Amino acid sequence: MSAEFEVFKTIMDRLIGSARLMVVSDLDFTMVDHDDAQNLSLLKFNALWEAYFRHDSLLVFSSARSPTLYKQLRNEKPLLSPDITIMSLGTEISYGDSMVRDDFWEQYLNHNWDRDIVLEETVKFPQLTPQQETEQRPHKVSFFVEKFNAFEVMKALSECLEKRGLDIKIIYSSESALDIVPKGAGKGQALAYLLKKFKIDGRVPLNTLVCGDSGNDAEVFTIPEVYGVMVSNALEELLQWHAENVKNNPRIIHATERCAAGIIQAISKFGLGPNVSLREISDFQKCKPENFSAGHEVVKFYLLYERWRRADIEKSEHYMQSLRLVFNQLGIFVHPSGTERPLHRCIDVMESLYGSEQGKQYRVWVDRVASAQIGSETWLVKFDKWESSGEERRCCLTTVLLSLKTTVPDGFTWMHVHQTWLGGSGSEDQTTWVF
Ligand SMILES: [Mg+2]
Image 1 (spheres, rainbow, N blue to C red):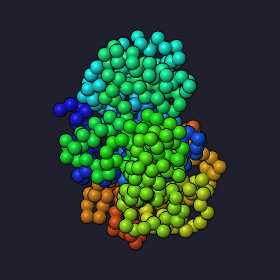
Image 2 (cartoon, helix red, strand yellow; image 1 turned 90 degrees about the vertical axis):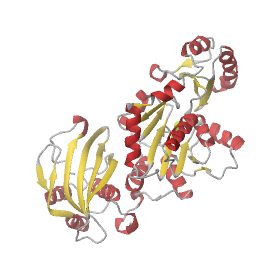
Image 3 (cartoon, rainbow, N blue to C red; image 1 turned 30 degrees about the vertical axis):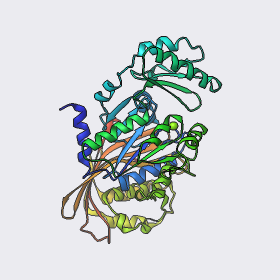
Image 4 (cartoon, rainbow, N blue to C red; image 1 turned 30 degrees about the horizontal axis):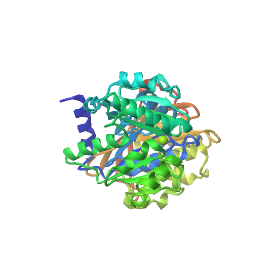
């Protein structure tokens, strides 16, 4: 069995049956709002996804970025871990956290493609400025071009390359990037390939939502039967393409919200699932009980933790009292440094840290929430818990034992919490890393 097949199978086996929803999103200015230093809409999406979708849905990122620039973005922004990553404009597909490459896809792209010929021809166009070295990929040759030149260059270049016997596609995007890829590549073709793969597996997602903002996203909106959202900040080039090509498709909307908030808006508009992020709810007692799940529970707790330390909520004994009810009195927290501490002692420490991060860029989020019911009333939940403060970021692989046998109506009791530093980047610090 190939590594790629094995990882694909692991992703699919996580789901019972077909994915309820597959979100396929572009990154720059769609999932990530580079104009929002606080990443609020992204964090809102993260909380929604981990609380309600992670367990039965698929998250796919589809970007023009190479693996190098993609990893760079993940280090800069609080991006969740996708199940599948489509990079370099649909020329590279990889699966899972280990990002195992789909070799079959890349072999397929070799058809009538010759990188050297592309280089020989493009050098004849002085209007083209090569993009940085990391963005030059086996099946993607990338340039910048002035907007006023773009159309003319594309036309002439396309004729040259055709004459040389290549089947290529030129994609112009963000009013500056000109990319040459094999005809069978592109974000749309890569998605079509994935959908075919799911079909062979007998598990096509029940719904697919594609999300984008620029010209290179246009093709994903042509895939049959998908829902689509152009975020409010979508570029004219995409809006114009939409008006000329798919204007009457009611399954595609132009959101009124920017970036990730526009994605949430589309989930709501098309009725694709829960669409109110816990980040938008100030009083968790108003959460509808039908939405309770292990994922919901951990997202909710860590949001409360963030708000307490940021002093975004009032300093009320009520919060700590309810936590003392929710956390088992005999429960133990294993700190990532390896020391043990009663859960109730952790709440005391948390209480003393009210407002310790006030006025700072402090955020807490969880990623890769996975839960398994291990007894009639017991769940084991595993997730990555992230904390960032300005430039600094820390992450712990966290395991929590939750029980429904409880003094809390409609809720879980936290029995045990165990953390391990991820990537060895941790510290012994038990005063600021509490949970
Ligand atoms: Mg974009």
